[in-house]
Amino acid sequence: MNAHRFWLVVPAAGIGQRMQSAVPKQYLTLADRFLLDVTLSRLLAACAWEGCVVPLHPEDRWWRHSESAADGRIETCAGGAERVDSVIAALRHLEGRAGDQDWVLVHDVARPCVHRSDLHRLRNELAPDSVGGLLAAPVSDTVKQVAPGSDRVSGTADRRQLWRAFTPQMFRYGDLLPALETGAREHAGAITDEASAMELAGWRPRVVAGRTDNIKITVPEDLALAEFILARQDAG
Image (cartoon, rainbow, N blue to C red; front, side):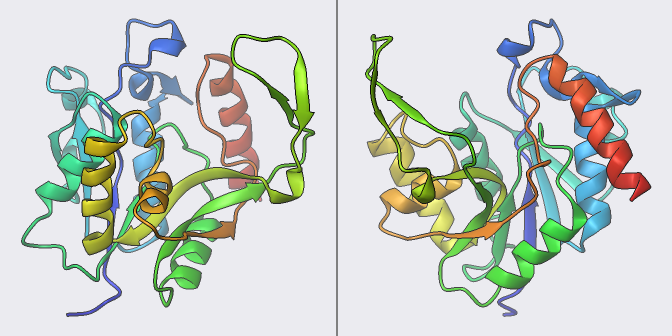
C-alpha cells in the first residue's frame, strides 16, 4: 500500500460557546460565506486528498444549507462531545479504507487562513518522517508564569523553547487512532490537540514552521481579521 496517501479530517461538531452566538462558530459568516465553507474549500483546493471527513454535531441543522454539503469529496460522521472524540469518530469512519501507514491531517475548522504553501510544506517535509508533526511558530512575546488562582508573576518562561501550535497536524493513521483512544481514556482533559495525544503515547512530533497569519477564530472580532488576512493572501 502506498505510504503517502493523505486523508483530511476537519472536526466541526463544536457549539462555539465563546462566540456569544446562537449559531455554532463554524456557521458564522466570513466574507458572506459560512466559515466552514471557506475553510473546507481552501483545504480541498490546495492539495489532492484521498478523502475528507467532517464530524458534525448529532443535532446539526445548518450543514445541509452549506456549500460543502453538496461537495461529493466530503463525507460526514457524528462527532463527539470533545474535539478528541470527534477526531476518533472520523478515524473510525475511515476504518477499512485508511491504511496504518496513511497520513491523516487534522485541521481546525476555525482556521480558514491556512496558506497553500504551508500545507504543501507540511506534507512534503513530514512525508518521510517516522512520527509526523504539526505546523507551528516560535513564540515572540514574553511569556509570564502565574500560579492558578494567583495574579502574581512567579517567573518568566524561556520563549526560546516555546512554539505556538497550529493546524493541520499530521500523523500516521495507525499511530494516531490508538494514541487518541488511549489519551481520551487515561488522560481526560489533557488531550488538547493530536500532538498532545502522540506525546503522551511516547512519540516526539516534529514542528514545521508555518505562517503566523494562520489564526484561529475564537471571538467575534477575529472574523474581521480573518477576512482582512484572506484578502491579502488572495491579492498576493
